[in-house]
Image (cartoon, rainbow over the protein chains, first blue to last red):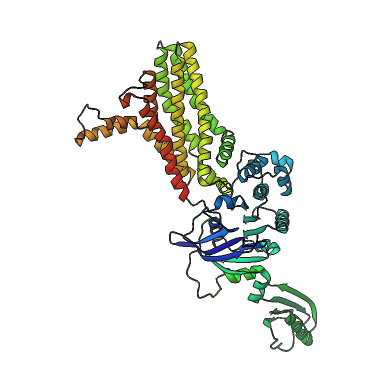
Length: 316
Length: 266
């Protein structure tokens, strides 16, 4: 596979007068792990529903693995693995039966037990009806079904919801292992740390638009939210600190001095300056969190004058 | 390939539903029970008992068929398992046809059991022919399939299970429970409008009488037993009611498919 794994071209979807997805362009290269971020109702699910042909676009087109998502869906769906959002299982059928069903429909000869073992479901679990499964177990079973037929592309819509931290880590391990095998992974989440931990690149959706696409590092740099440096001091500095290059929002009180350092070297300059004036007893540095980054793209304080007034597409 | 896999899955899944079997059992027991009662207590001939029992069955079996079928797609749509199926290679048409086959098989099993039990009761207690038993089971089966198709069509065209249930109840009321009334209303209206004279029975009016699957099945049974298999009058024939039944199998499913094809599976 050399072509892009996912290619979205001017894709829009309107429900009545609500624009859920607004001319989105996106290319996901083969072999990457792409994190698809955005708050609930941002249009992530609608975008994925369009990719899966659950919903037809108002305009634009999309292809995966070089195949049109609607015209070539049957061929395409035999080569991808999907954990859809709000998926359901057959309560009365066993876990193994589910995987067997996926294998038959995909015309694959996977060993169901091997797949179930890979996602952490025991033989005993496999024999139980899916109706008795916990949310975490259901999520694992859905993943096992997605892995049937060694897909070239995995699409996981909110795969970590319902998983405990341990389960989420195991899921990341599986994602990495699949990626090492050459699989492209596209997964959505509204939980940033899940994406941060594995994704090569991320796209951020807000109000139906793709507002940013880049690596997490580059996005963070681009935003220059910087690092928050907090110094504990034994007395308030006698003089004003004055201007320090690349340090903003300096805040002084009788116990601490705070400043936001926009580039790495500024941290040392900031600490040195404070030490000239008082005694530093402790240093704490907080890198800008992805939450801040995320909020700056999706929060109300973004001043993007070009943003059209779009009603958030609250379509599941 | 996909269709068969889905049909088999559906059969395995639906046949594990206890509620479904409970409804089926109640209906079947009441039909077979009343027939037995008739056969034992009355001094009617086997043919008459069959006819009465057929009349009873065409009123009861549609309930089983609709209950069995109306959730075929809406239940999967609501639980989200339809999203899983459609993430896999099968198309919406594959899923619909697979579901139709699965539920049809289930309905045929239920009809065969009930028809056979009822028929054997009549045959052992009274003196009947196996020919009339075959017609009895055959046309009940065909009618059952028609109502399953109506139910699956309703299910495919509905966005929620409660809506499918409401439409299915409506279909039963119109086609089975209230058709006599509707037919009279049409007749009265037609006479008022001068489309026909009172007491006459034009062909289209006869067709109105034959329209619901249960009526068509009864006509087909009566005409078969009456030995008019190859009669010249279409309304006394077997082929016309059978044609009506086949239309009931094809049309609702097609309409349901067209609606499902355009549906947002959100």
